[in-house]
Image (cartoon, rainbow, N blue to C red; front, top):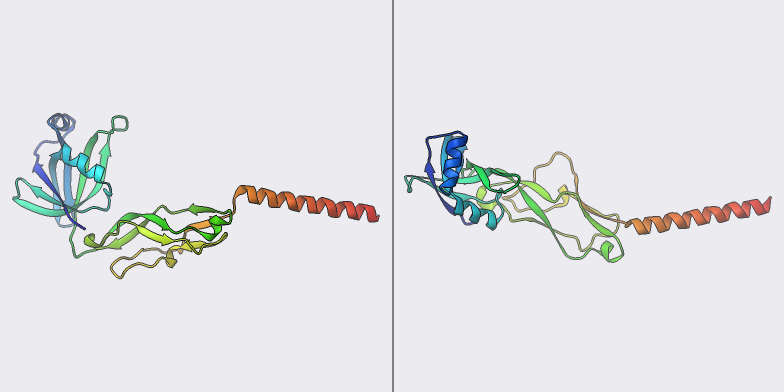
Length: 211
């Protein structure tokens, strides 16, 4: 995965008023921190923030953050991005310093491939976990977890322990939870119920006639 270059400036003021002043200047207040880094107040260009948002994968991407014209460079991930609930303007960004040789935990989307036998027979694919947490080095973060559903029939399911990963990526879990399953549609269930009801009524009529 390629690192995305970002330039940041150290800021010395904090509070709502200085933060608003920064935004008027086209910059977003931010903070940099990590296990070996003291929290540092910084700011980044609004256009850079817009670019990384449009690119997507905020919680899974790694960035090469340059401070004060390259005086310090560090590898970071976005830990939190705060935005205004109405205008969607980005208000603040939390950058977390990471080490390329230490595992991080991130959530990646679940993607399916193939067409399920059960779906072709009238069933419905139900994705229970649309994201899964993975543990891996920052340079090994997968874009997604892909699951082939071609052989799944109605009633079949894929559990987290069924998912194969590379030796560099693991999916930590204590319970073997269901990720996705193929279920019967409500229409089929209703029709089956009606059939059972008709059978039961028929049996009752026969029994009444015998008496």
